[in-house]
Every structure is written in C-alpha cells, then in structure tokens.
Image (cartoon, rainbow, N blue to C red; front, top):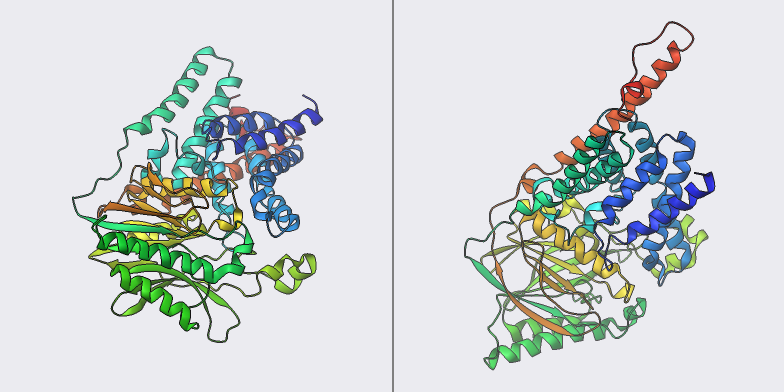
Length: 512
C-alpha cells in the first residue's frame, strides 16, 4: 500500500469511527475501526505510524467536534480538534510496537485505555469526548460498564477489535477461528450481566424542561424569559396537581442555567422562583449562575429550594470546561481569537460532591459535561446517591448531535452504577434512564415539557462503583509497560547487532 493510500485510509477510518456514536449508533464500528487502525500501522516505521495517528485523529475529532464552533467560530473548534488529534500519535505508535509481541490483541486494547486515560486528564482536567465506551449505549457489551466502568468497556471493545485484526493476519486457519470466536464471545457474553434492582422504595420526581426562545448562544440575552418559562411550567404542574390530574411529586428538577440571573442579587428573580416553589409545595433543585463576592467571576450552582425555608444546600460544578466556562491564559487567548469575549467571567470550580437529601432520598447531582468524567459521577454514587440527576444546558449547540452523544454518556452511567439517571436539559433532550441504560421517557429538543416518574431508590453498588479507578490504572500500566519492554528489547537487540548473537527478542518471539 502506498504512503498516500495509507494516509487517506487513516483519515477515512477516523471519519468512520464517528459512525459508532449517536446519532448513527453503529456501535460495531468501534470494534472494526480499531482493528483496521492496528492493521494500518502494523510493521510501519514509528515516524509513519505517528503521522497516520495524527491523520486518523484529525479525521475523527475535527468533524466530531464541529458543534463546539457553532457560536464561537471555527478557530476554537479547529484548535480543539487538532489538539485532541495529537493524542492519537502515541496511540498508533504504541499499536505498532506492541504488535511485535505475543498476545498483542490484549496489549493493543490496553493502549487504547491508556490513551483515553491520559486524554481524559490533561490538560486542564482533560476531555473525554469520543471514548470508545461512549459509543456502546445500544451495544450488547454495555453491561461490562457495571464491572469495570467505562475503561473496562473501552478495553473490551478494543480487545474485540484486536482479535478481529489478529484473525486477518494470522496464517493458521484454526487460530483465525479462535480469534473470531473470541471476539464474538466478548460481544455477546456481557448480555448475562444484569443491572441492579431496587428494594421497593421509590420517590416521585418531576422534570421541567422550560425551553429557550431560540437555539444557540442568543438565548443568553433572554435569561429572564428562560427563568419565567420554568416558573410557568412549574406552576402549570402545580395547577394539575391541585386539580387532581397528576400526583404531587416529592421533588422537582430544573436544568442547568434555568436561572442565569442570580436570585441572590436580583429580587425579582428570587420572588419568581420562590413563587413557583411555593406553588408546587415541594423542594425544587434549581440551577443558577452565582457571582463571586468580588463580582469578577461566577459559580455554576445547583440550589435545593424549599417551599418553606427557601434556598438551602447547594452544589457548585466541580469541573468547569476550559475555553467554554473559563479561559486559561486569557490574555494570550484573546490575541488569537475574539471568541473569548463570549465568556467574560470565569466559572470557578466547587470542591464538594453533589449530594442532596430530599424527601428521605439521596440525590447524586452532576452538571452537564461532568457526566463524561468517571470520577465525578462515581463520587456522587459513593457518597450515597440513590439515583442520579444530570442538569444540563445543550441549547448552545442547537440541533447538533452533541445532545444525543451526551445522552448516551448518561445511559452508560446508569448501567455502570446501577442507578436511574434523570437528565434535565434546558431545551432538551430531557430523559428518564432506567438502571439498565434504557431511555423510558424523553422530551424532544426545543419544546416545553413536563415529565413525572417514579424513581426506584437503589442502595447497593456495582463492582465498578466499588473498585473505582483501579481498572483504568491497571490497564494503563499494562499498555505502557509493554511498550517500554518492547523499546528496551529493541535497544538490547541493537547493542548486540555488532557482536555475538543475542537471545531472542520480544519482537522475534512475537506472534506474527
């Protein structure tokens, strides 16, 4: 295959991987594409593997993240896409190296996990969009998330791909059969994993999707209208309760940014929210942007508002997104693009877990992109969350696939931790997700809607919740460790090349 053909193939494979994610949901592509990438870089010089990795990353991330530039323009979008593509350089170099040793399908899968682990942590806390696990919400493999979390699921997906690649290159027909059978088993066996079941206790939760005047960032100019939308919808629910048309919920959930005007600094907003909470006469978990004491920055804050005592316990988003909610190196970034002006004040992070006690139940709360970060969601369950609330605002991204991709992440979290997940979105998609990852009810984009659901309270925890980050660290150590051993073996081989014959190297002993 020519260099040009390999380069074009790398780009096309990157584009093809997008098909594994919503709205396409061709989850099996997350198996076939890693298999094809492994074959593409097999036996290639490391420099060429690096270039192929970059091209693959560009083909994947640049179109995948196009929604990030909807309102801020192409510069931030392209910078993010190119930067994230860089992480595929060490990935493909590692894939080339470990295919020289026995059992390489296992090591290729470990390298995928290692790459996702690093990308999910640096810089500025990382960016996890595009993890293989997040493409598996409709896959028979989803149940693995409850055993090894999202890293375990990514590993299984990549391992299936490695076995497919092995079936292509092995020269022994019976090994091909073993490889194909192994991949098929990895795909279907997780169907045996059952989600956690509730003990019979439950809580009734109402979700308010108040909607926004228009898609995109323009909604920011209509902050008071948006809050009033949620106030009116809550009062509509209260009227239906009083009329006996629907049972009174135990709590009401509003989405992220349902009050961009701070109720603590604007009496009209305070009174408006308070009137809605008093009308429904149950606690309402609202979301507001609260300025810091010096007014220089803000905090993305969830507040439990009681009909009798008013605003009480709160949770501040722990993981604001860089360049979206705060601007690192603001003075430098402003010279590159004027898009930083759309975020004049930085969102400061909170330092405590999102937990609320409501009507005898414990709610674990995460805000928007936090659902994509393993540790933040896991912390909320470990702290006692009997179900999870995801307050989000996707109105900025219009009708793009971003909303469905984030919903898929919530579906994974449901099975991973054995919890009902309630997504409350400003303009959609709000959804009720059962502990098995199934969406039982949803509201569509840019509509006003009210959903009421009976939520089972689950106290038990999954293995993934209990063991936490350990699968990711172990798999990362495996991937990095094998790469180091291959490099050391190659160096030893070079040192002996001018002298007596060396002992067999890892490369020479590898399964070709």
